[in-house]
Amino acid sequence: MAHKVCLIRGDGTGPELVQAVETVFKVAKVDIDWIEVQAGLKCVEAGKPIVPKETIEKIKEVGVGLKAPLTTPIGTGSVSPNVTLRKRLDLYACVRPIRSLPGVPTPFDGLDLVIFRENTEDLYAQIEYMVTPTVAQSIKIISEFGSERIVRAAFEYAKKHGRKKVTCVHKANIMKIADGLFLRTFRRVAEMYPEIEATDNIVDNQCMQLVQYWKKYDVLVMSNLYGDILSDLAAGMMGGLGVAPGANYGEGCAVFEAVHGSAPKYAGLNKVNPTALLLSATLMLDHLGEVQAQKDIEGALSATLSKGVKTYDLGGTAGTQEFAEAVASELK
Amino acid sequence: MELHGVDVYIWTPETPDLPKQVGPLSLLLISNRGTKVYPPPAPEMHLIDWPRCRYFSETPVTDRDVNELLDRLSADGWVWTKAQKLYRIDRVDQFSKPY
Image (cartoon, rainbow over all chains, first blue to last red; front, side):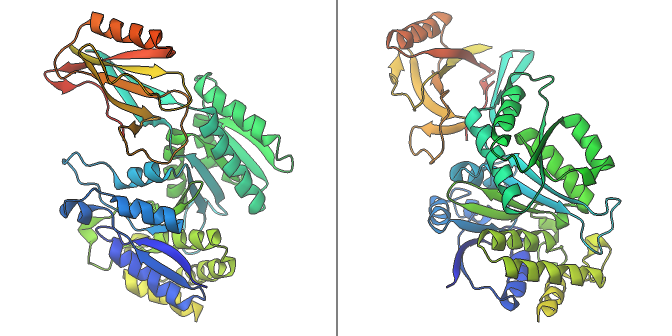
C-alpha cells in the first residue's frame, strides 16, 4: 500500500528540488502517494496566511510531510512559515544527521553524528521586553516537560539505530537554573537507558571538541539556541547546507526538510544541489519503515558523488535534474 | 516610555479563565511558551504551567491600574509569579508578540 505524504513544493528553487526527488523516487522501489499542500510566498501573494489552516490540518491527518525550502517575505511583518509549521504542529525535535559523503571532501573524515535540537522553547519562545529605555530582556524558557521529551527522543533514536553514546550539550556552569534543569532531566532520563553511554559537555567546549575530536561523538542533544548554532556548525563540517538533511518530529507527525533557504536568485536555473532534500526524503523513508529504499537511495547518491557527478556548489557542472537522473540511473 | 499594560505570568496548569476587563486594562491574549493560545484558535500543544496573560490598553495607564489588576487576580485566587510592565516609546511597542 502506498504511503501518504504531504508535499510542499516550496518557493524559489523548491519546485526544481522536489522534481529531483520525484525523479529518484520514481525509480526507487517505494510507493508514495504525494498529497500536495500549499505554504509560503504563493499563499501570501494569494492573500492567504503563509501556512494556511488546511495545510496544517492535512499534515496532521496524514502524519508525514516533505517540505522544500520556503521564503519568508521581508518587510511585510509576515511570520516565518518554517517556525509556524513547527509551532502549529508542535514539532519539538529537530534532528540533523551529520555524516561524511563520498566525493564531498572536508577536513572531517569519518564524520557520523546526529544532533537533536529542542524546537519549541528556550529563547525561541521569543518573549522580549525593553524593561527600561536602555535595558532589554529576553526570557529563556526551559521546562522539565520540554527537556524530557527531547532527551527521550535522542535516547530512543540511539536505541533504535544502534548508537552507543548520547551527549547532553548545555551551559549549566553559568545558567545553573535553566540549563541545570535541562542537564538534571538528561541525567534522570539517561538512567532508563543503561546500555547507552551518557555524557555531557558545556556548549563552548563542545564546539571545540567537535572540530578537533569529532569521532568521539555520536548523538548530541541540546536546547534550542545551542542546537541552532551547533547544527549549522556541523552542517559546515559535512560540506555545507547543500548536503545537510533535516527532520522535525512531533508526537503525531513529522516534517522532513532541507535546512537551506529557497535561493530565489537561482530559481529556474536548474543549478542548485538537491542532495539535502533528497537525504531529507530518505530520513522520511526511515520514518515510514522503508529502510531498504532508504539504503538504496543513499547508496545511489554516494555512488553518484563518488563518480564525480556534482552540482556547482561542490565544484561540479551537473544541473539539478542531471544530478537527480544520475542518482536514479544508479538505482536501475 | 509610556505604560500601556502588563504581562502577568500565572502558575496554573491550564489556560486560565480570567476577567476580560479590569479597569482600563483588557485581556488581549494568553500565550504559552511564546505561542498564542487565547483568543482561539489554539494549536494542539503541551501547555507548561506558566501562561503569559497580556492585559493592555491602547491609551496609557498608570501603576495604580496595574496594581489594581494584580490585586483583582490575587483576590480571584490566581497565583501570579511574575509581572512585566509593557511600554511604548513614540507609539512603538517595547515588547514582543507571540506566535
